[in-house]
Image (tube, rainbow over all chains, first blue to last red; front, side, top):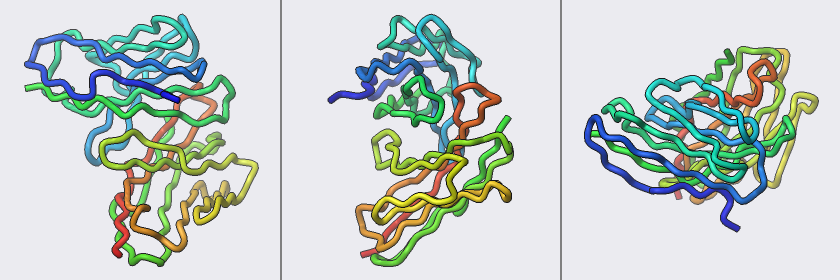
Length: 113
Length: 113
């Protein structure tokens, strides 16, 4: 009963390096999301994918790209990491019905030095 | 877009007492309000939710109330236990923004044994 799985759990990057955060869900959900969590700022939406083949920008998309690889997988890429991207990143998924909750993974803690 | 405010940011209660966390939202079209509990090092987990056609919902020691006129909703935890200690987030879903959730900034609840 895995739910939403994120890898890696921890990552340290130097400024300018690139990396991809992986997310997979086994609940057959249509929608998938990437959030970042910073102290005192709650959860802010980076990108989301309402269904396979579509992606849309959220509140804070600058510096990120996403790929909805298939229905199960949604990856987040940092092309040139900056210290301002130091954060905890959460992937989430949701059923297609409107009034249904998000299911979150356990996060990736990213530090950019 | 929607703006969700959450108070208080920190809350300490004695074991057995009640805890109340309040959120307000700005968009009158918002119609789904989940509450999440986040334990240290983990992702947020849904604990209760309420839809706009309902004024109150209860699940054992947890209840949520919604006042659509005033645009606020509250989480009530009765007979608190040490394992209730965590960060709690409220959220609102607005049809105007597709499937986007807007989160409050969180309340760190400490239950003192």
